[in-house]
Image (cartoon, rainbow, N blue to C red; front, side):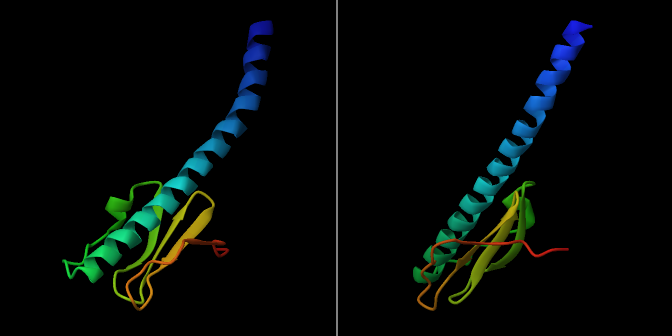
Amino acid sequence: MVTVSIVGILSAVAVPSFTETLESSKTSNAKQFVVDAAKDCSIAILYEHDIPVVTQTEAGPDITLNDYTCVAGGSVIADGGNDRWTVEIDADAIPEFPVKSAIPES
């Protein structure tokens, strides 16, 4: 009985911490994905390579790809965890720093 109580208390403490860590990981993955995709896009535009095509499958299951417009003046937008990350690609095909913005309410 005591053992069951101890396990119950430990799991009540551990589960919220694990959930928070999981969301933080998803957020970091989304940010890194957006930065990498924007860099790849910029390199393709600047050096006149074939424009890379990025799909939801390549983004992975933890990231929701919202927009991938690989042109000068385009952007890459993805959600991960509780955050949305956006990288604008300016008219000179240079990616701007990622900007975190709130996910709109459903």
